[in-house]
Image (cartoon, rainbow, N blue to C red; front, side, top):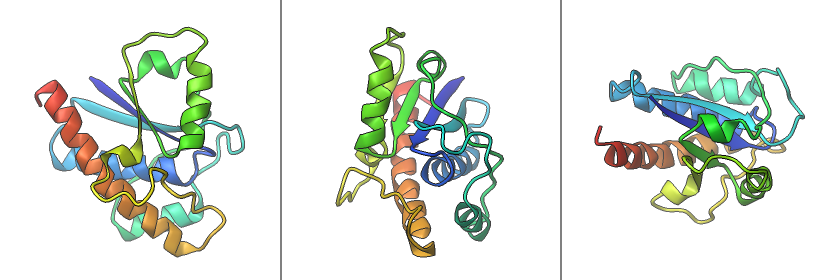
Length: 159
């Protein structure tokens, strides 16, 4: 089984939306027996909280499914996940700080937009302080990037 983790700051906006989109892509390809994903936040701001209502609105609008409560990224995630996908450079730096505590080297660490065909920036913008449009923009970014990430995983694992 291949394990993918999406990571943002609070785990209520970007990473759960990426998780929902990626799960949908995996199901469309019939790969749910081979690939599973989750999401986490580098902060402890929203532990056990549901996704932001605007995230849930986009999930409903796009006919996706989500079953998630906020959790914090821990050093144990390095041992469990094959792909750790950070939403921005700040969270990537937070992940790398934990990485130095001595963990396995079997995972791959990326920024989500490394898989975006048309990135104007390597960071997925945090929509939390904005309006509904920001959540739709994040959906579009993680959809484009998620398709390419899935193709990358398929190629690496010959799926």
